[in-house]
Amino acid sequence: MCVEKNLYEDPIWAKSKICIVPQYINLDVKLTVEENLLIHELLYKMSSSLIKKRIAELLEIADLKEKTLKLKSFLKDLKEEF
Image (cartoon, rainbow, N blue to C red; front, side, top):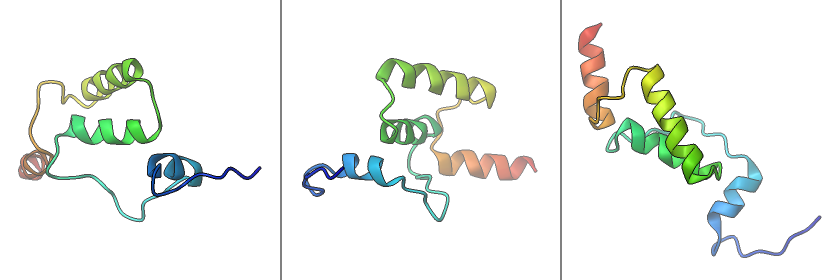
């Protein structure tokens, strides 16, 4: 099936169709852990209610619920623990 779409006008649609697999860990250290999770869940077109639920669950599992540090600060703190 061939669908004619302008990939420049709808890049999220295009990315969702080609199954992007990053070569490197693509976490943005300028964002919080929660913001990084949000970006990835939006790429998978999850509903906003499911996104909120899943982020809360993942932060709870990783014991990060109370932490709102930028990822760079969080990783620095984590490194100091070990």
